[in-house]
Length: 115
Length: 111
Image (tube, rainbow over the protein chains, first blue to last red):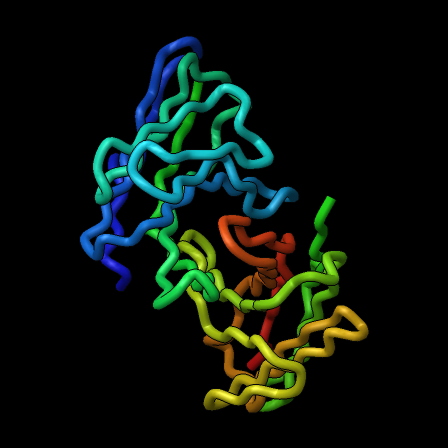
C-alpha cells in the first residue's frame, strides 16, 4: 500500500458537466501522475506533476486540467465531460530515494461514466 | 515517439509451467525497466524492476534485460492460476520523463 487514495471511486455524470477527481497521498512524494486506461489502449498518461504548482502534459491531455496546490493532493478536472472520457482513471506516485529511480505505485482507480 | 511493444496475448500456459512474457522498446536511452501485474478490475501492481543487463530473480519471477537488443522479459516459474492477469511492461529514461507503458500481455494459467 503506497498510501494513495482516490475519490470518488465511481462516478456517473452527464455530458457537458465539469468533473473533478482527487488523488491523495500520505507519504509526501514529489511526483504524481494521472492515467486513463481503456480497452485496446492500455495506460495513457494525461498529466503529471513534479512538485507543488509544477505540472506537465502527457499524451492525452486535451479536455483535462490539473492542479496541485499542496504536496499531498493532485486534482484532475474534466472541464466539460464527454462520452469519450468514460474510462478508468488511475493516479500514481513515484517513490524513489533519488531522482535516479522511478518506481511508480498506483492508487485504486476511479471508474467514470459519462452519459 | 518512444514505444514499448508487447504481444497482447492471451498467452495460455498449463499450471506448473514457465510463462515467458516479452517486451521491446524503442528508446535506446532507457535506463530502468519495470513489470506490473494487473488483475481484472484492479490497479497495476509493481512486481519487478531491473536496471542492469542480465537477470534479476525474485521468488518465482525472473526479469531479464538485454539493452543491446532493446529487449526485456519476465519469466514466471511454476505458474499458478493466481498468476492469471495482464502484465504491463514499462520503461523509463531519466529525470522528469514519465514511464512509457506497453499495452500489456494477458496471461492465462490453466489448472
